[in-house]
Image 1 (spheres, rainbow, N blue to C red):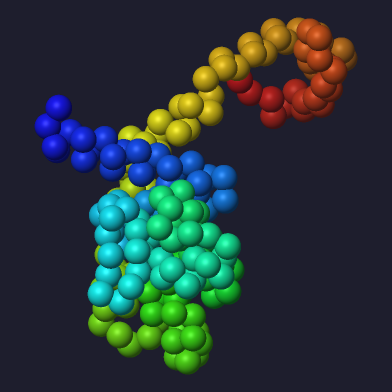
Image 2 (spheres, rainbow, N blue to C red):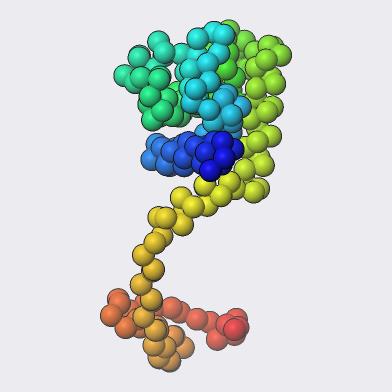
Length: 191
């Protein structure tokens, strides 16, 4: 197996973990994947000059305040998603949450709940929003696989309806189900 195959497999494992945790935490997997791609390219070994670590580039002190270990892959992913979600709750928009994720919530507040005029923050938001919109239009296979895994049990077939005409009403009865009555105006009823 080549080095590229191992790396691709690791990236898919990281993506699958991001999708799993984001769904569990009620965050759109597309935004979580977009943040991780922008922050680290899905590399857990990524380190910034400012001390941020891991897939979501968490500061170890921020992770500790959340009761997490920034150096643990699962904690880093959960922490990044938790932090984004808390910024979203604080500011109420995806762009302001991303601005706070990048520049800090204090800077967003300092600029009257607007994106701070920092070139790095503006590039960060633009990059993530572009990727997010791409993922919404063309979901990552890992996102599609997570939906498929949830529906592994085939759905139970619906019972066949029985339709009985009673005067100017139709009564639809479901076998093994509670009857449903529909009133239909004969002049406007069309099939």
